[in-house]
Image (cartoon, rainbow, N blue to C red; front, side, top):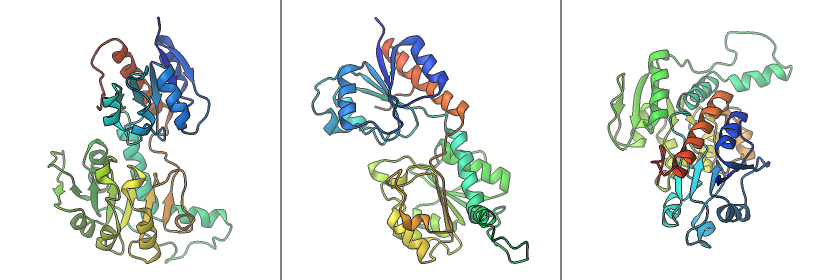
Length: 319
């Protein structure tokens, strides 16, 4: 008898086909996160679920179960801070994710944000679209030249290294990073002992560390105070790593020159005070928004499900 699997959102066609070839699949049609009631029902009714960002599986959701029918949550994405992996383990539920598939796509979006923020591209496009552009002149829209700048990376994992590689090899940038351990990379890179030291040294600071209770508000008012006035912050990791209220204050007070964000602390809510900042480039979580990347992610999630039900080692198990 085929296992019952729920896909929590509409997925790329290739993902649905691959899952349907192996399992009895139900696709939830809403694009919004699952409610607690839906998650509890899913844990009771399905053998496995493919979840994604915003589907909050907490100890409270699991509390009604000793061992739920659902034995695997295959997260569609590398970040799984919306799933309490330890609570899942206590209830006999395996959690997996999709690393690797997202690395280059997310690093590309980091470069998009770096270039847009430094060169004021969002502000410039709004000027043209408004019909108020009066023509070129020597002091028009002066921004920051990216080539040769100092890049600081918070979190030198796969994605952090991919950003650093692009910046060093493509733009001749000097690379520094903050990470729990020393990393061996293919180009020169200096490890800093504290985030404050890194923030004070860097021209461009990129957040690429996974979200966890330890990294909540890791980038806060102290970090912004350490940054140089021309400094740029870019976040392509998770929103709650950056203390949003402190970020807004730093922008309003001129402590930093600008910010490029693909993620937000209370996503999808973006504070009006942040939207009002002309020196903020704001993207709607586009990190992996390319069909081939999403299909690669789906293939990894389906393989995690297949391996689990076949009694094999789950390739990308996180708990």
